[in-house]
Length: 510
Ligand code: HEM
Image (tube, rainbow, N blue to C red; front, side):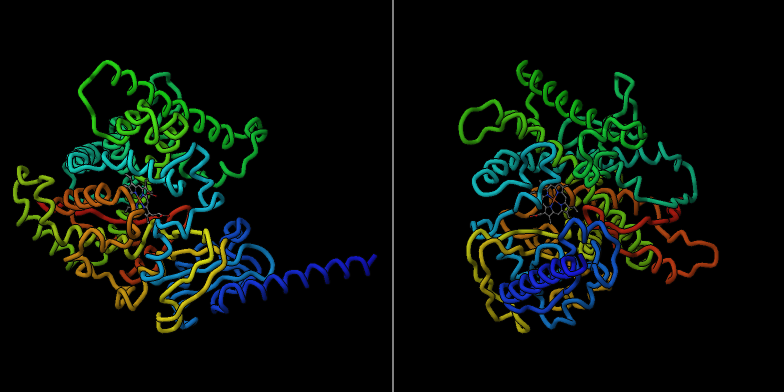
């Protein structure tokens, strides 16, 4: 018996060794991560970090060392036992090749599965299908939409101040800002993207069941569970599972109702709307190449609701923490706000183009904590990557089917591109053009919502900093440096965010 076990083990070990050496060769003997499992595998993602597993947040934890120690901006991750081998790059030159839409790279099914649970969508699509989605949705991201984002962010901020009981207070302690930013960003995408205006005080649905906001929030924070839980488990008498099931059913119902209501409104020739939902429904009613079917409508509705709020909320959380630590810069932003928007009447979307420092603050927070932290692609054919190696002037031939990941944390902490990368330096972005905002990716497939996000971010920060000074909310006896060590750290769930941010707001005008 022992002999059989040993023989099986020997065959397994030999096959792994062979696989390991083949992967080394296929990935051009690039140095990098070597571990029992790769972080790209479900096991590597789920298990805590250890000497055998870099863990799901290795890109954050090792951001200062992994490329430096390898001596190159493009590295390999090869497992001894489990997981797909792949390449990670922190080089913008390589990243641009990888995310190009020319057809050499594509998004593989397993890397977009989480978004496909609700239906086909723009994020998961490739080639002609992606072009179709993008062409239909693009017109909704217009100046009129961005102006409405500005207006609505301002309205929701005012509602939040009242709803949270800040009115008339000299100072407000917020032990965790993250819940507030999440709620604000959700209201914004629902209102401006889908014409489904929500109030700060969440209400129950008309039928008295779980509200849309609660359903989306439960679903958004349980993506991975949704992927893993088999249907039969939903029948178990477990409170958490039952709540998840209710949230999924409610979400489906809300999205379908939203779509049906808008269809009926459009059939009655109501005044034309220009939001994302209307653009998609209009296409669903046309024939031919550029039409969306119902499953694509639901898939995109969920994707945009989800991608459109988590990312912005995480960036605002990071901005809160960084502003709390940089009082001098906060004062500069305040002076800019007084100059550009001295009265309420000046608080307009048009004037926001002059808020150079406020915008730079949002972008620098997004650089330090790029919420879309991995751009994952597979090669569709044999490809030769340019600009690799220690001097970024080498080439790397890759076989068809190789996985290449743009490490957005590594890229945005790459000292060649962002000198002194751990320092908060908003001035990096003072003259940035839209195409320089690399945290939204590059080229034709860059984030469709980047101007939406920036309008929302600037408006939120402008309202906040015009009225309040942000300070660290420290524990008793905690120094500013200790607060920084405790708070300013990356947390990876589906996106990259910062941990819970505790701040104190001190009113400026009293
Ligand atoms: C700070 C906020 C945001 C950041 C950092 C961000 C980042 C990104 C990144 C890096 C990508 C590329 C993903 C890839 O190619 O794999 C992306 C794509 C996308 N983003 Fe954003 N995003 C933000 C806000 C938004 C908002 C507000 C919306 C919607 C209103 C949105 C909708 C999308 C969509 C639909 C895509 C897929 C585009 C395509 O494949 O053509 N994002 N985003």
